[in-house]
Image 1 (cartoon, rainbow, N blue to C red):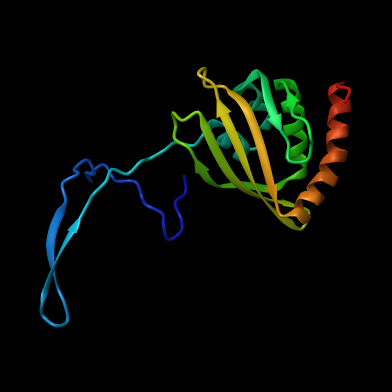
Image 2: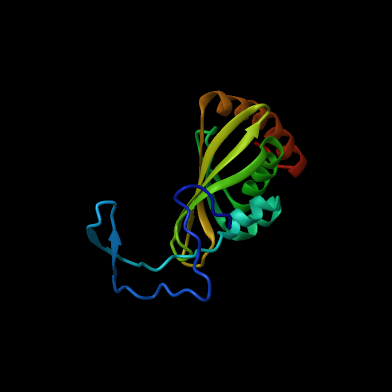
Length: 180
């Protein structure tokens, strides 16, 4: 996991302790010579692991994703009006997406390891256009993804994606022997 940006917090080293919730007190000299007192509250740092879906996408292993899903996973596409149902269909869709998006990488992951809901914010290229998106995943009690929704922006990039995806999806469906 890469930490970057002004709000990034590095995980504690093994030599550091963040277990204490007792405030730290001290004093600080000011330019006028007066002393000011301050208190610092220390809170535990949460170190989360990457969601397996994200790890597979970032490794380019789209073929591994259907096994992370229920047999009847529901996929809601940003460019289709009705949801797609089923692990096999999801595999065909993700294969096509992997050939349309370029330089796909996640920039934020929302949701803890044990949470049933996760939001994975990403950036990719469609031709020369940057596209921003979010994968919303819901996992059932068995830990498998049972709902998967994608949202994209901006409109110009979404339209370019829809055009390229339409052609790639048709080819992928034919190659898989699925009538659509």
